[in-house]
Image (tube, rainbow, N blue to C red; front, side):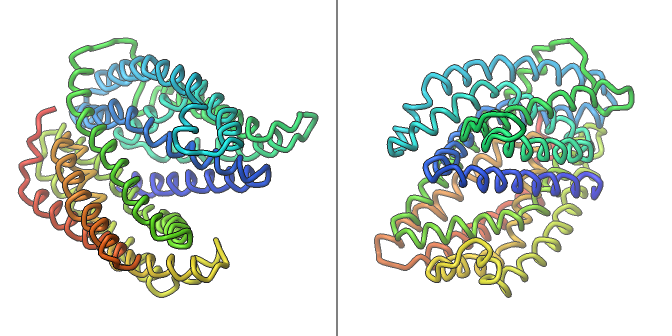
Length: 430
């Protein structure tokens, strides 16, 4: 479990660091360039919904095949999903390239941000195919129990991305300074490296997965049967979060800035939960494939316990030193105050958050995505978004919104504990 969870958590950290390095370098170009890249991350949330169509179902089925000892069947499914991802990416590329200016304008961006954003996102759109396949290969290998090699690949590609940013954005070693376009090219090239490295890895004889050029339509249908509810879950959840952020933004600039800063700090606290959710998903699916439902159940329980020990410990740090942590990002006193209140409250909620991470991951590994869809959507709207809107309209301060958010996290954690202990999800047909 640790051999899967720790590399997955570290890869998540490297992902965050890569985003921070990108933002720091692009911020040196202009404010409009920084805003354009920041907005592009919102677009990628929508694109991630499409990737969920094949990623979550693929994870559930590949882990089961590995558990059954059917490596060839898992490898054939990986090939089929790669073809599907490539075809799907074509439509996303066309839409992103042709409609990039319209998308930015629709989001209310100013003219200079629209101009910079169109330059950036057109290049990113041309690289969507490698982004789709990179996501597929990482998740497939994780489902097979290999997260260590993915971490190594990510470390190298992050270094490549940072170096190319330096060369292409600012113009070094004989290259012309390309600004935001250079950042886009650096990102696409680093993803190309990932795909090539994964291809070399899975062609090795002892790899946990190989490429077998067989397309089984029956397996693809099974993947979609699991994937559509997971994609719908992610899509509605993303919309819910956008509405929630809009409510916070209505309080003012300091409140929104404080929330955004604190959210990035909390993202580091997510690492243990993220890692053990990946481990639970892989090991639960493999155990179900091996017809050992007791082991599958225990894998989730053990993952959850370890995750909440780690995240609970981080929560204590968030409670005790919030201003110290926020001080790395801003010196504005009002923003520091808001972010500190947020960190103190979410520090208290780290244990139920860990349980939510791991148990929802375990259910997805078993293919019970319809259950996670119902829980996540109903919980977010009934216990978070609607109460937050009512609290705002009644004149309550931003702290009330943060309290509501943490109550929702606690309720959702308890719901997952109840569902998990019922064990019916262990017998989900995929």
